Image 1 (cartoon, rainbow, N blue to C red):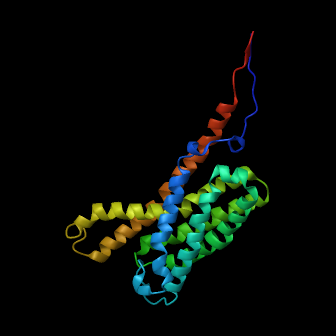
Image 2: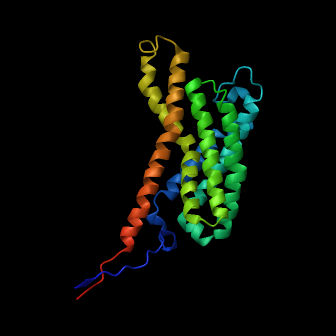
Image 3: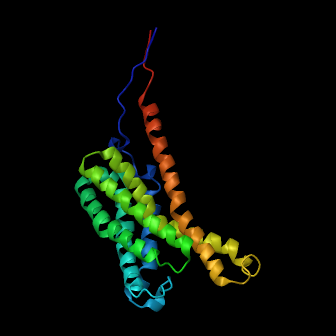
Length: 243
């Protein structure tokens, strides 16, 4: 007769994991810092001529709100590096909570509101406008849901919602990657597919990159979240004693 012994599943967060077992932490922080260092200074000058985003015709607050979005977004992208670092969360829970508040209230929420407003008047066409507004709504909603779950001590839900919030935060980086890919693929087709119409080309590139930049990471994050619980249960069950 065989007896199957079920051992308690030890949460992954409680296990001691060496830093080199999390090889993504360092590169993530490096990319976040580099992105902020490269992107933010031009907006600190408050000179609209240096902006990478063309002004929205007939909407005077566009540039001030864009600057605010960039600054609040920088707080979000830098603070999220600490929030997704397992060792930091485990060793410094108080700092995790305070940085989390900064991430939510001085980062994501104001940045998402600004994103919805300036996204609605995006110069990159209607497809990009819909994407930007929807991204702002989903980003705002996931973050609020994560914060409320944490306040209610539903830490499993808190983690899931904040993973979604995190990938939406860093989608501003993946957006740039897709922009390069789309420009390389579609740029040579200006005189053929787009009939020499640069505005049509830019709207197409803008529409593709804005959607791919956040939808693809969000889908991948959801697939990862759905795979993790089953993996942990399998790891926690062992065949023990046979007689």
